[in-house]
Length: 180
Image (cartoon, rainbow, N blue to C red; front, side, top):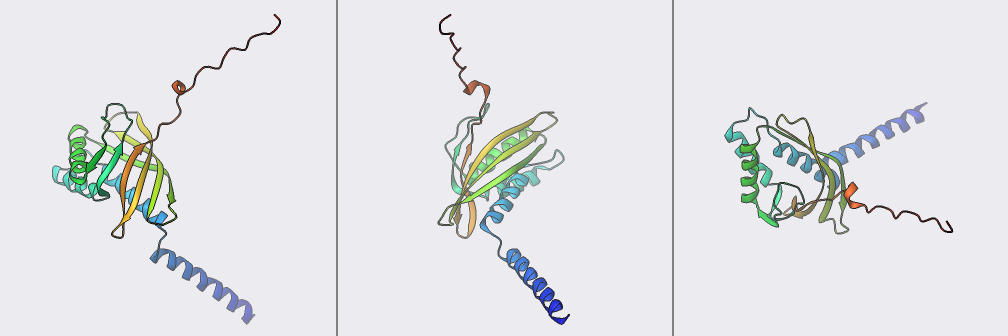
């Protein structure tokens, strides 16, 4: 009976040790997912937020990006921008906040792929944005490239992923009847 108790106690201590290790030293994928969740929270704002709160949120949002970010957007109503610095990111976030009263952003199905050198990663996910009182959701596939800079995972590239649409397909040729 003592041996069973010792084995159970050892299993519990081992499980507790593994859990504690993962809490103290999370994987890079987990850290990146947490940072992307924070980016989505910072990009979101409520209609009752004041100007100062939106400024703080916009500056906090920009801190998740590297000093120069490559941006490749293929989204209607938005210009294709190639490079932004943190100040420009802050300005765009503030401009969006002045034109839109409410924005709720979520990053869904985040898939993080770590490079072999463990210093860069890509995150593929779906952005779901609910704008103001609009009933429709804006949904867009995105890919972020992140690099570990001074111990922090910062976004260095943002790009939209073009998904399949009915316009991407050519109609199949009509089969001809041979011998008719």
